Image (cartoon, rainbow, N blue to C red; front, side, top):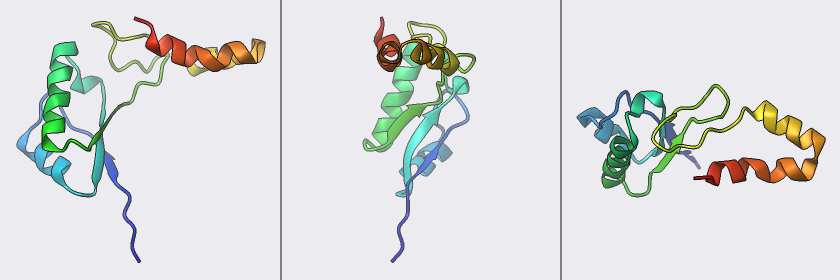
Length: 109
């Protein structure tokens, strides 16, 4: 018996090209990861995500946004996340305080 895990792929730019649509349509693709090269502003990103979902509504759309120096979307209302080291230090000082801070920071307007 063969099991195939879905792939998470990326695209080169801020718009879907014909080749991107073809790749995203493949049944072994489970999602797309976005990087800074895929972002101009919130409106462009929203449009890109809508177009991705038109290709396949079941695709996972993710962002490589780790916090600290790795902030893919830095403008237009996106939340700045602290480096993971800062969250670790907060946890070391007071474990209960550090546990919820990532989620709290991610949901701030």
